[in-house]
Image 1 (cartoon, one colour):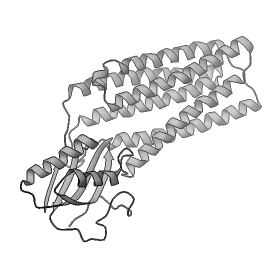
Image 2 (tube, one colour):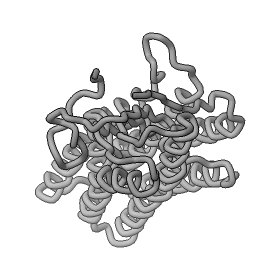
Image 3 (cartoon, rainbow, N blue to C red):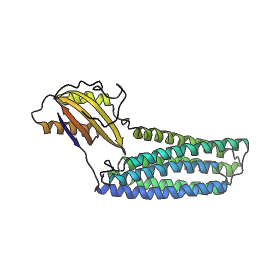
Image 4 (cartoon, rainbow, N blue to C red):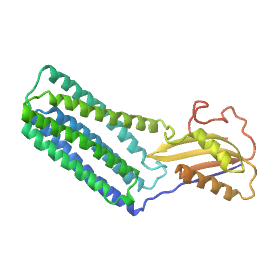
Length: 317
């Protein structure tokens, strides 16, 4: 049998430095105006501003996680952290998601209380701060969106978060105008609940994705059964694919698998073709492949998504 692995490390990619700078600026702008909306919401009595601040928190969290991912991707692994520190981004995302769920619950609870006992709202101050928040969101989006030829997945995802937050700022502006023109303060808790639904949606998605990675689940975009079938179809020497493990480390897919093959005429060329296939079709740049010349006889030889309960990645034969 034979065993090989390949992986890449882009610690000196110039585009990563540019991504890092844009993410840092956008994070500072978003965090600063989030703080302004919190203070403004407390001073004006506007729950919609506080809800929009919660939505901006989702953006600040997304920007921070993306920034951490870019920074940690430039750090070389060591003997203690053999994958580097990329998993810290997942842990940060998980903590942020839990915090967002708590914030959303508090805002909704307060909104219900305000329906029962209406509170005065300073519409003028609320409008000024909401407009400033909208400008901050547009500025952050512009910073992230320029230089699109070198944006990576983290930057694109962060830009979409910021663009979505524009809705929260627009909602706060609408609430402020209604209060100024009509004096109808219930619009404030109504729009705060609507914005909270956006926060809840983002937080729930972030919680599911981060938990899937922390539990070492396979990327949702990859069908492991289909991957096995395609390897058998595309690699002529392959007879069986088993002991397949696929998980994520800081959004980077990592894989181990055993392949029973006909003894190859050129061992290195066969390994190279398997690695190239995984990288080109599934963007798996770090794969550990074990070639076997005899059929697998263990009880878990058919291990793949949906067959039996997965076990730990570490195993020996």
